[in-house]
Image (cartoon, rainbow, N blue to C red):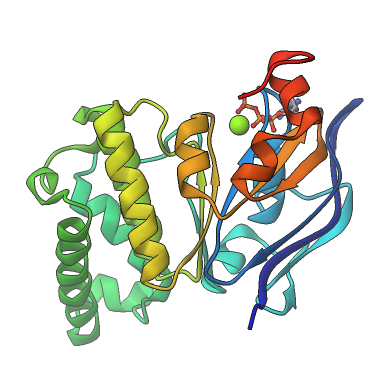
Length: 257
Ligand SMILES: Nc1ncnc2c1ncn2[C@@H]1O[C@H](COP(=O)(O)OP(=O)(O)OP(=O)(O)O)[C@@H](O)[C@H]1O
Ligand SMILES: [Mg+2]
């Protein structure tokens, strides 16, 4: 049986006179890999940021796991089980990879500031648990060799994987990835695609914005196409590939993928 995990209802986002997102409806089912594509400036990131609470919409509602989340703060939405990565990587460059990952666990910690100051038993238990979980996550993403490297010193493609690892540290139900393959070489991109499929098999639901058309077409169950802030098409890769409006948006009239 299908059930909707994330839903946008009639979402609009304007910046002054710029209508970045216009009346977008979306329903993402549990266990789906759902792609969002569209030309530069189509509104993909703005729409994402509304879904995650990083931006407030000018109209419409977001529902996640049966709750209306519009108006909630990003951190609150994260605790409900939504994790994300950013188009512009947001790691702490002067912290090691492992330290960056451990920050991801922070949200589920029982430790408060008092515990941290006095380094009591609860703090030490949390710290030990986070360390072990962090090491395990790095292993899972093939990042172990970089554990003690400062994030800022890593190649772009590796930084993107570290960001995904940190998002997974939240133990989310849904993972939103904004251009995760940007800056990756073809082999890294293929590995990322395999990894995302593995995450789906592990029970995660994934939404991914991506420019790399081959990546999207081979990975996603369904795809939403935005153009000038509007949804112009939605469906499986085959459907999207053959859609007239999509081809016009990308290549001008008459061209196909
Ligand atoms: N903070 C902002 N202030 C003003 N305009 C913005 C802002 N952020 C985005 N825009 C504009 O809104 C529109 C949608 O931008 P957005 O970044 O959401 O598109 P995108 O599809 O993610 O593009 P890209 O593929 O380049 O990442 C664009 O016209 C952009 O210039
Ligand atoms: Mg974007």
